Image 1 (cartoon, helix red, strand yellow):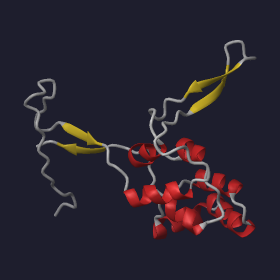
Image 2: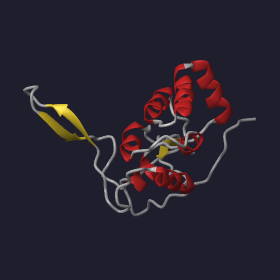
Image 3: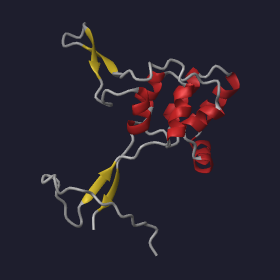
Length: 170
């Protein structure tokens, strides 16, 4: 018996001649994150932009002469609100990587929490056990380490991107 499930999705494409597909083709669907998780993260952000304000992430790069520094748009995310980024573009359910845990440790204001985060980020066996048995979302990690301040810039630049889920058409 297969562990795969079958779901029926019916697409109305009669008025879209450019959308054609055949059995065996694949369809990528970008899921939306759970709104309770999104709301929980938004409540933890220490410097949230206004709710309906779009945010643009920019990176600082050296100019062509190497002297000038320029802020250039980061193409990682489209222009969107923080809520839209957390709902549709950023992966908030996958357990944070050791690198992200180490970054959180540098922000943590509680020495005991900081030490625990550093141990998790540096001890691969301990990290894998923690990830396997807890499988924490980003919000659950922040609940476990409540002294970590959460800047909006960290979420927008450090969380992995939400990946499409692919389904075969039959």
